[in-house]
Amino acid sequence: MSIATYIFTAAWVVYLLATTRYSVQMFQQNSYRTERYNRWLRSTGEWHSMMNIVALLAGATFALSDHVAALVIFGAWMMVIAIAEFSIKYKIALVYTMRVKRLIFTRLALTAAIVTLTHILFVEYTLLVMMLLTLDYWTIVANLINRPLEMAISRWYYNDAKRRLRAMPNLRIIGITGSFGKTSTKHFLYRILSEKYNVLMTPGNFNTTLGVVRTIREHLKPHHEVFIVEMGAKQRGDIKEICDLVAPEMGIITSVGEMHLETFGSVENVARTKFELIEALPESGFGVVNIDSESAFNHIKAHGVKVATYGIANQRADYRATEIAYSSEETEFKLQTNDGTTATFATHILGRGNVLNILASLAIADKLGVSTEAQRRAVRQIEQIEHRLSMRRNGGITILDDAYNSNPTGAKMALEVLSNFKCEGRRYVLTPGFVEMGAKQYENNKEFGRYIANVKPDGVYVINEVNRKAIVEGLAEGGYPEEQLRCVASFSEAMSELQPRLKQGDVMLYENDLPDSFK
Image (tube, rainbow, N blue to C red; front, side):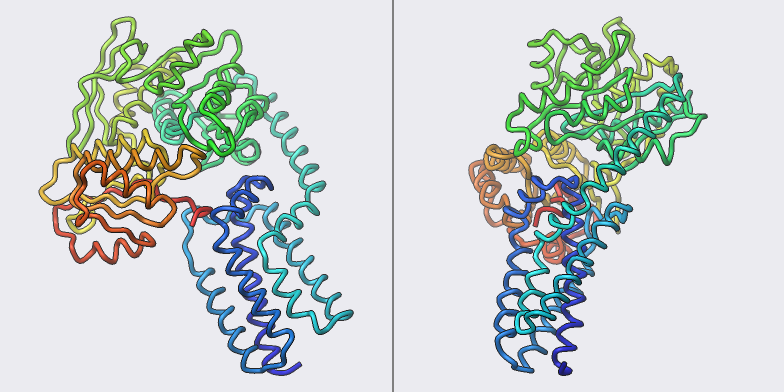
């Protein structure tokens, strides 16, 4: 082989490693489910596949020629792309679980085998085949090869987790699900119950069946008295599957909204899925539902579900927050229960949504006998959760970070906080809008634009092209000044433009950061 061919091969290996890592990362973010990964490839994954197809076409051209300069130039181009991809800091990093390591190994081994066989039998097509093997679809093939082994391993882990739970019959298990608010509620409940109990909660985003299994096997100890399980869902049966594993005796539904409509199909299906948690509770179980969520309230009325309820706007709630007051330092509210009990609470957590999450936690805490004084102490000491309407200050600039949120209700609550936030400077909103909303995505983002216009921030940065047209239309309909609107390709571009304008006392709201699987 010539030096040029060696250079090209080395560059291709680095490029292959970069595309493999990214492809497997997106496969992991899509819960290792082929149909979801395919949906990503058909939509927001197109840019990455297109980049590989360009590489494929260029590889085919070079394969049919023996132009040394072309090989070197193309190899250098691939190397630059690969290094750039390796240097990106993703919001949700690839977790190198044993399954991921097996998947990467299988894909690379398959690639090596095909390239070697092609080079032996059809030398002139080697470069073409090498480029073909960088396409994202090869992750699906590797997953199919590994599937029998993965199913056997998962089944063994699942049965082992069930055995560990059976060995702790006195463990109190609480499930939490909802279209949004479940992670914050989990943290708040953990802090409040820790005043009386030794508590374990599922860490991070371990809200799938396999994530719960892993938590049980790696973190659950005999001294734990309460286990809080966050339950995520993207299709019917997901919550039931987790409930079949852990058998919760208590459950919280934080909301029913227009999330993951591409897989659920309708809000009614979302509600049915979330209420799989309540259906799984024993006769003596205790369910708590947010009836400020209209779809959750309608489901309760339609099906006669017996649960304790909480809310702010809905006067029928068993647990209700009133007299909510915000300041730059804390949020204060009064708790009223249906038995006439009242108590005042203060917290450093911002937003009406988080007050709702605290209400759900207080209902469970009451049921488990945590004293009101202990509840007050815990609520005051609750720490902010990063990217969930958390607040930080940087050189006199206040940042309201709601980047993890991606739903209309939560976004309106964050904008409400921005509108009521006392500051001496200007207010800015940076957002790419909502995703995974199926047929309602355009209208929801358009309404979001109208709501932003109603808040009247001093500047709006619409990030990315995915929802740009809808948000801009909504802003225009709301009468927002065009000269105060900027459309940019990325968050970094928005910050590079905004940074020179920022002054002490200004406030920025980061709202609805896109997950890494959307570009």
